[in-house]
Length: 515
View 1 (spheres, one colour):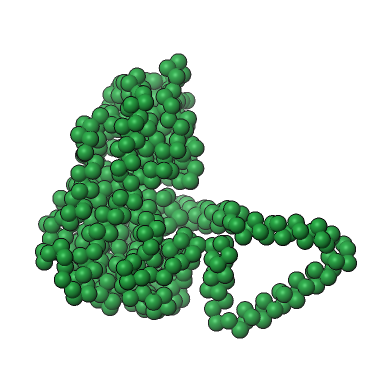
View 2 (cartoon, rainbow, N blue to C red; view 1 turned 60 degrees about the horizontal axis):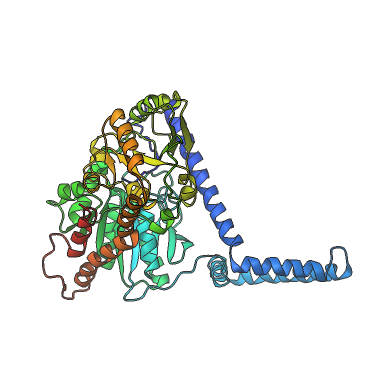
């Protein structure tokens, strides 16, 4: 399940005050994302080799020309001349921003973008969430495509009134693309207007021409993008992959056309991959070709967490991270905290879409708010065990929780509700399944009693087999036959356009190989 920003529809809003509050929260989140982005850029600059060189040069300049001296005045005069020259050349350049980005990349101050090759087709990602939102499946898969040498064009969910696509490098081989469209559009609630779709296609065409993109694959991750994906395929022959990671009918405040658009995307896509078996089975009869690519973890990121079992004399700290939204069972956690008052419970995640009144009433529960993905390992180090206390609703019944792989990568015990995707992992003895607060308490106590080096080794080995790099390799293998068909060549996988691709089928068994 991909946590997406909270959205509110006028059709469902209770009062005008609720609408205004929702708008203010959205603006606050947008400003927070911009601030986080600027901090990441500043950190990258400070950590770059070029910054170290500039710092050394600055120290040398101060030593050779101390402030207030004649030498200092000569240096300042030379710098003023250089600045005037810079303004002159900037005015003569047709695209000074692109030149500045290229220069920054050349000296190590920004992400490098390598040209796409015939073998390494470009990936046009029409995503569920912004790149700088919580780092989840959309960004993880696209980052692995970029690391494999593919140029990734990752569309933003915000639009502008211009005619051209605005491009910003954010990682090596990853470009964030701001498309023209209605700035007031909300991808979770609105339909893509035909006039905006046409503007987007024209902008992508110009961008493809500028970047020399002859081959690409369109990966759509939300129904909003359906007509744009179709238009890009009609114009360029680029195949469409629908990466279905959630049961969209389970989200509150969908737009009136969201479910209908998803049905169209399922039937029109050249390949539909899903994150869970339930999603795959529900869409198989309507899709041309289906496959199962479960979620995974960035193993190296989470295996760095300290994993020594806690001392038996210490009260355990039980943790959860992720959105505390309508699918989070706050009542269950509050009851669990009440029957184990000596335990500490720490919950990381936004509470904007959740009811936390029962949790706030418990003295041993701490609501810690959001935590950047980069800081998670440090925050998890002090926890004794994890819980996944989701409510049993259609949305969660169809989800394959990313966090279970990440939690297991740390080696620590996990207690979770028996969602269909978690049952095989529980049967393999890697997590403990529970339903009630009493069962959760007993499951955690048993896991902590039986915890040890061997149990932690098995958890980590499982996580190490379920990585985003492996998932990307499986998705790339499933895409290859689509590329052959789009160029009019013979599909080496055979003439059939239905059924699971073999590489994806192997992935489907990965989560149960311990059982």
